[in-house]
Image 1 (cartoon, rainbow, N blue to C red):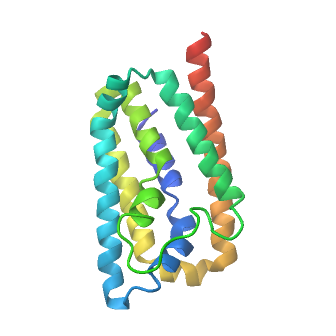
Image 2 (image 1 turned 90 degrees about the horizontal axis):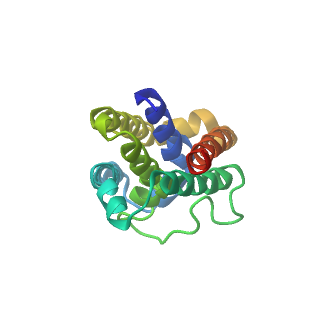
Length: 195
């Protein structure tokens, strides 16, 4: 695993293009002049949570006595479920289900849309496998978050350009790529168990 692979995987997992309709829907009841501040707050909370998992998630896993193979296979399962939900969203509630009305706070924008379980599991996995590359992992996380933040800040423009069908197609494509990444993570974990 290198910087580029970590960056691309995190960007796919954060799924900023697929999250555009959800972000627009959740923020529609927020005053227009306040939306950017709410969005910035939620994105910064997500970054903070992801950085916590990057730097301290490994210590939690070590305290729980979890091995790299367990993290790899468990992360692959979570990533696979998220990918399947991207490809075949549940009827009625979208990828993350229904959301309460009013101004969002942490849920659902920061967690689980940007800082989701698959991103957290992936960060713990790469740190557990290569703790000597913390600088690269931090750079990959911040770069993926920054690209996601830019896309989400300009979500109304992306929505107008791509339209509902275009966004759905991009989300399905990202889901297919995530399925392949999750299968590879599972195979890597299983190979370590049996070899």
